[in-house]
Image 1 (cartoon, rainbow, N blue to C red):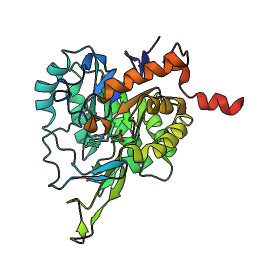
Image 2: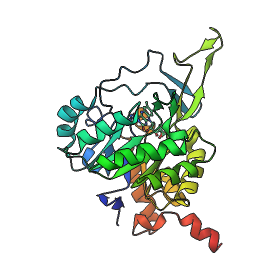
Image 3: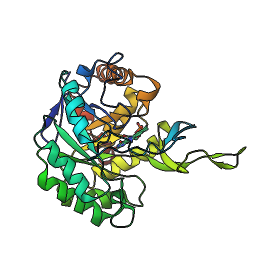
Length: 306
Ligand SMILES: Cc1cc2nc3c(=O)[nH]c(=O)nc-3n(C[C@H](O)[C@H](O)[C@H](O)COP(=O)(O)O)c2cc1C
């Protein structure tokens, strides 16, 4: 059975990745998960300097998921390079670094710093606010999305994945913009903006009022967007959003994802990636699928010959 997939020239031993921010840099998961079995560990977003994140409460549960407002808390690129890269390099897995920034210069600084580091893929989180331009997230404006992608691509030494925000009217417009800007792959979806109110206290539960909704509740939106993007651009697609099982992973790949990422599921079960891999293998065995790449985008073929 063939499980290897290739994302922008980087071969992963299987299509299972971790979704940024839900797996730290793997250290806390290592007692429960064999990191050698994960196709690629994508780490928590890292910025040019330490970010404190938002004050609590910054996580709340909801039906089929959770809303977080962590605020991209991270220790900064220097600590990451010193501590996390050597830790992850002990394992036979690829390393993907998720990059946060408030300005184009900050994104560029992190990519430049990583140019000489032993990591395999960069993932640009363009859902961060663009402070210089008045607080608009780069990911909701095609012009800004292409601009930041192009600027980072110029200095990047590793293939560049751009992570798309679902909080837009037409995600294909942003996907095409980052393709034009030089992205080597796209990943989607990031969290959907959501909110909850404490009806007894009559106030918002999260300190920031709003946060990012993740988990199974967002899966149908993610499937629809992966399908749309896979058919709009000529780039590898990494699908995520509510993947809890191997069958969920299959669904994303059938929609057009070349690889998938496990997010919120890690917070419920630290062995989620392992279980999802085993379930994917069982599905392939039962359906006599020899190569996992054969299921990518099959819904398109089904549409042509019903
Ligand atoms: C607690 C938490 C922290 C996250 N931090 C990041 C982050 O640093 N960078 C990023 O690009 N996405 C971040 N995300 C978004 C996830 O990587 C993923 O895109 C999203 O949660 C959808 O997948 P899921 O439903 O499987 O969790 C975070 C999500 C959660 C729940």
